[in-house]
Each structure stands twice: as structure tokens, then as C-alpha cells.
Amino acid sequence: MPAEPVTTEQDCPYLDTAFVEDTVGQQTPTVTTTGIPGGPPPGCTFAKPNGEPALTVEITQAADGVAARTAAVERVAGIGGTAVTDIADGGGIAVGTSQTVLAVADGTLVVVVTVNQESSLQAREITQTVVAAV
Image 1 (cartoon, rainbow, N blue to C red):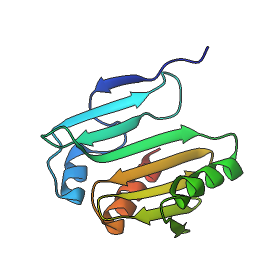
Image 2: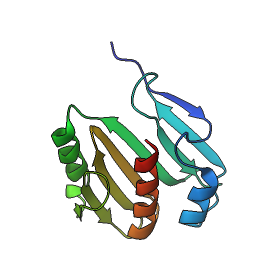
Image 3: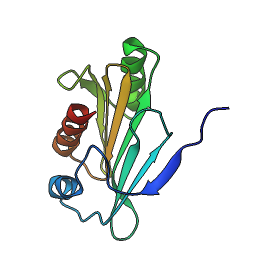
């Protein structure tokens, strides 16, 4: 039976809280990580004072690079996504009025960044930082 994900209130291991706050322009006093021990890097949630997420990062493992790229594109295809070719191994981005979702493949990892605002620039900056760190 696969291990269950564990959520812990702690700093994100690959994304500095001050950098996130500066980039998204919001206070995020509560940071949690969710991951499977021994699995891919954990996901991180940066929550605003009211508890709503300002930024989330999800990282999943795919079978291979092709599967990772496919998963990244499919993650945003149903919400009006457009191609991203300049970050890691490519993927897609969907910019909406209340959130932006950017998903890219990085080798066999799928990195999905969701920002609670309409801003591809912030999502790109955060995603590039995550990919460089993992």
C-alpha cells in the first residue's frame, strides 16, 4: 500500500517565504508542506492571514519525460491553457480572473504553480525558481 501524504506546518524547502511574499505582494504567514516521505519534493501552500492560499506548488512524479510533459499540458488544457516553452521542459499556463495556473515538466517531475491572481509574470517567476531548486 502506498504511503499517505503528510502535511506539516513548516517552511517550503525550495521556496523562500519572503521571496513569495515579495513576488505575489501578499503576506503569507502560514506555510505548509504536503508530501510522501521518500517521494518527490513536497508540495507547498503559502496561506494568507485569512487562511486562503495565496500560492500553491504541487510536484508529482511521472513515469518519464513524455508523460510529465503530457500531464503538464493536460493540467491547464481544460481551463484555457496556452503553451509554455521557455521554462524547464515546457508545459502550459492558464490565466484567469481569480487565479493563474502554470504547469511544466522538469525531467520526470511535473511542477504546478497556482497563484490567486491574474498574473502570468508572478507565476513564471515562481515556477522558474522552483524548477531551479528541485
